[in-house]
Image 1 (cartoon, rainbow, N blue to C red):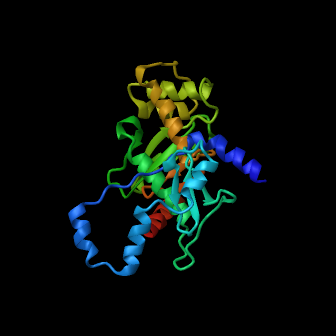
Image 2: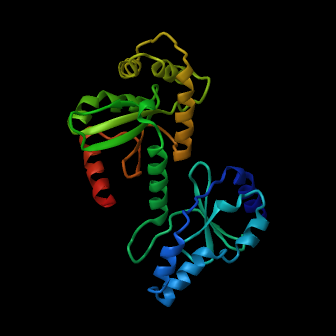
Image 3: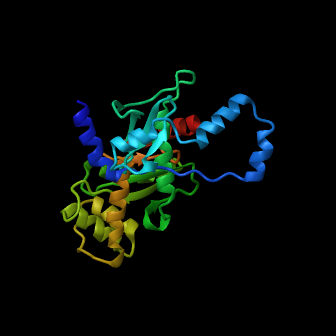
Length: 270
C-alpha cells in the first residue's frame, strides 16, 4: 500500500506547486513582539521555523520541490497541491495520505473547498478579460466564468438562454474547453471563433450549429491556454461555471436557478 502510494505521489511530484509568503517588516515585527502573548509568540515561531518532519518527508519524496508542502491545519500533516489543483493531505512521516474534504468542526467550514475556491479565484483573476468572450448585461449583479465546448449540448442550452441570463444581471465570461482535446473538430471550431473579427457573433453561430469557414491566427494559441487553465481548475466536463468567489458549479442550470445559486454563493462569501 505504502509502496503504491510512494510511486503515485512521486509520479505526480513534477506537477506539484506551492505558495510563497511575503516577508514581514523588521521594525514593525519588533514593535508587535512586545505586545504578543506567549501563545502568539509560539505561533509566530512555528511559522518561521522549518516545520517538524518536513525534511524527512522531502527525503522520502525527492521528486517534490520544497515549496510543494504547506503545513495543514492539523498538526503533523501537510497540504500538497498538484498543478491541476488537486489537494492531498500527507502525514509528516510520509506514511499516510488523505484525499477528501477537511472540515473545521467549530465553524462547519470546509477548509479544503475554501482552498479550492481561492485557487480558482486567483487563477482566473490573472486572465486578461480581453482574452475572453464576454456577454455583458446593462447592469452587472454577478459575473461568472464559463468554460465551454461548442459541441456540448448543455453548453448550447445555456447559451440559448443568454438573453435571460443577461436580463437577470449576470455577466458571462467565456473560456474554451474543448473536451476532445487538441487537433479535434471541436478544437478547430473554438479556434475559428477565437480568430473571428466578431467573436460573440461567431460563438453564437457556432453554438447554433452553423458551419463557419475554418480560421487560424496568431492568437489561436489562446485556446490552448484556456484549455490548460480549465485543467488547472480541475474540470471534468462542460459547461463549468466559476463564480466570482471561486466556487465551481458543474453543469447546466436554468437562468433563474443560476441566479438563485449565485445569490447564495455571494452571501456565503461575505
